[in-house]
Image 1 (tube, helix red, strand yellow):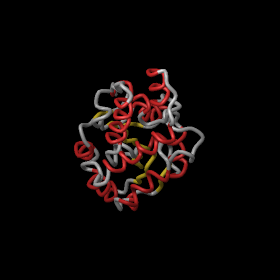
Image 2 (cartoon, one colour):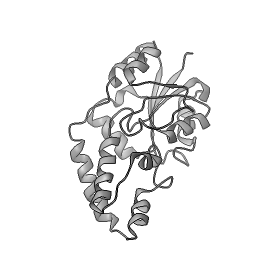
Image 3 (cartoon, rainbow, N blue to C red):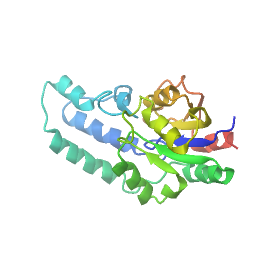
Image 4 (cartoon, rainbow, N blue to C red):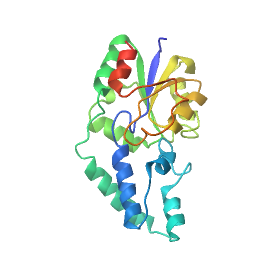
Length: 214
């Protein structure tokens, strides 16, 4: 099936930010005597802490209240340090160039902030591959609600059925399917253990996915 547009999630699809974020949260939990298994943490991947909150979880486990302002600052420092030399995920640029040559329109659709997503697109100098970037705040609700993906279709002036979504999280899959879009999944180190049976297709990497679009 030919798609008019390909909509990319950001974290864990275009740039491998999710592993560093998870490792920073794991360190916070371990510093307070608790574990944070991936099968628990992944509840918030692709969405936000309204879906599931590691902060609330740690407070419930420990019975303590924390100074999250201080802990958040230290965790963010660790994340940015770990991501200092991070580039795009394997196969990203080749896929984007392939789609461009084929005339497919491209957009980023993320539950993260514009500050985060636009910052990375600028730092890694690949913002020019995308016609539009839709982030938290551009629609009423973030993933797993369909709003962000529907906003992307609206901006591109395309029916949702003509859009293919590339995701790595269950919240993202739920969002895309609720928007009436096809969704292909490329799991990463954080989401590899999840059940993606609701997705239309699953690929080990963007390289294999690119082959399916040729």
